[in-house]
Length: 128
Image 1 (cartoon, rainbow, N blue to C red):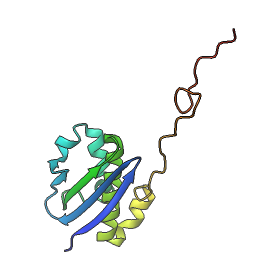
Image 2 (cartoon, rainbow, N blue to C red):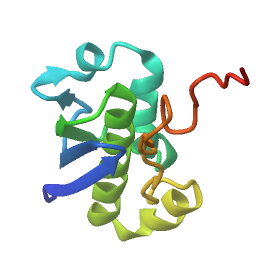
Image 3 (tube, one colour):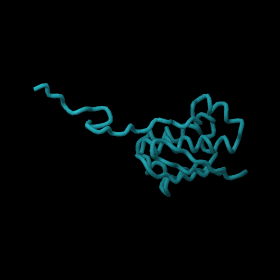
């Protein structure tokens, strides 16, 4: 059995994922995943590839994640876990690909434009 590593990105978050065969311990930035992602939805999002590949509890995962917010970080971890699963076993690629786990989400924050409050919101128009 081998250790595998992969990188996942989403929005401004970058996750470096290391996976090794083990008992299912998941550490994110040296904290248990329950502590780092207190919301269950973020934990589910981050570990969805294991669920899709039916590999829960078979790997110890160590993640180093930085940048962005918790939602983007969970998405980055998801992509990193999916990529490392494919690197571990190439036969897992079709189910993960059909579930959309191997696609990097290209959506980014739209920039603010001059003369406006935000990217699309404008200042109140006054006719007189």
